[in-house]
Image 1 (cartoon, helix red, strand yellow):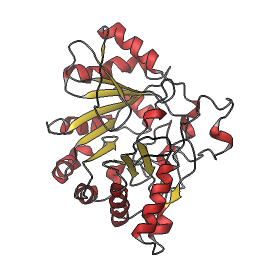
Image 2 (cartoon, helix red, strand yellow):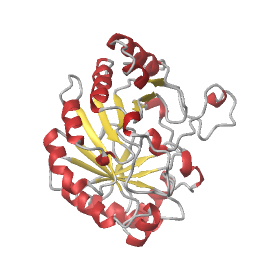
Image 3 (spheres, helix red, strand yellow):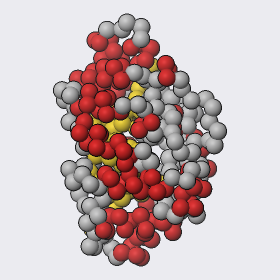
Image 4 (cartoon, one colour):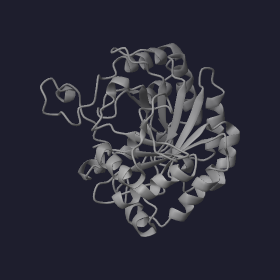
Amino acid sequence: MLDQYGRTIEYLRVSVTDKCNLRCRYCMPKDEGNLLSHGQILSYDEIERVVRLCAKMGISKVKLTGGEPLLRKDLCSLLRKLKAIEGIDDVTLTTNGVLLESQIPGLVDAGLTAVNISLDTLDKAQYEAFTRRNQLEDALKGLKAALLYPQLKVKINCVALLGKNEEQWEKLAMFAKETPVDVRFIEMMPIGIGKSDPNGSEKIVYERLVQAFGEAENLTGTFGNGPAVYKQFPGFKGKIGFISAISHQFCEECNRVRLTADGFLKPCLQYSIGTDLKELLRSGTSDQEILEAIKETIYQKPRSHQFKNSENEGCMCDAMQEEHRKMFSIGG
C-alpha cells in the first residue's frame, strides 16, 4: 500500500528475538539483563497472522532479524509458514553467522532466498574485542556453508567504524572480488549505544576502496529488498554496496516497516510511534480491526528521519517522541 507521502511500502522486517549470542559493543551491553521473556515475544502463529495481514496490505518481502534470529528454536518452521502465505515472494534472513553452518540446510529447504551475514572484521583479536566473543571461526564457517547453495543470495554487512575497523574494509571487499558475494558497508545509525561511535561515511569507505581496486561503475536497478546503492569494481565477481542512511538519506525511497519481537509495528526507526499489535492479537481483536491498525500505521509513516537535522526548522523531532530503545530490542 501507499503511505501518506506516496511511497510503496512492501517490505517488513520481523524481529523474532532480542537475544543474541554476541555482545557487539555498538549494539548490546556486556551484561544485558532486561531481555524479553518467552511469553513477551510473539509466537510463530502470531507472527504468521501479522504477516498474512500485512500481505493483504501489499507487503511482499519479509526479513527475519533479531537480536540473533537463529537463537529462536526451529526458525525453519516459521520460515516455511511465511513462505506459504499468498503474496509473500521473499523471506530472507540477517544473522551474525555463528549458528548458520548447522542450520543453513534446513533454512534453504524451507525456502530461504537470501542471507545477510554481519561481519565487521576478519581479524580474530579485533572480532573478539568488538563482539566480546571468540567466535570468528564459527561465523566464517557459516559464511562458507551458505556459499554451498548457488540458489541462495549471500551478502556480507560491515558496519564501517572510523578509527576502528577501516584496515579491514579492503579485506572484506575481497569476498566480493573472489566470490559472488555482495559486501555492503553500513553507516552507523545513531540509535542506542552506537550513537557515540565515529561513523565511516560512504565517501570515506569508497575512497579507500578506490585506492585499492580502482574506480567502480555505478549500478542501477534493484538488487535486494532495501535501499543499498551498488557499485561494480573491476574484476569483481560480486558487488559492493553502501547503506548510507546518514550521508545519503534515502527516506524518499524507504519501503519498510518493522515488527519488534514483542509485537510493536514501527513505521520509522528513529521514532517510538507505531502500534502495539501484540495487545490486539491477544485481546480477541478481529482480523479486520488489526488490518485497519496496520493500514493506519503504514499510512502515518513519517516523511523522514532527522538524525542529521535535529536543529532544523520544521524538524519532526518535537512532534514525535524519539526512540530510546537499543537496536537489538527494536530489530536489526
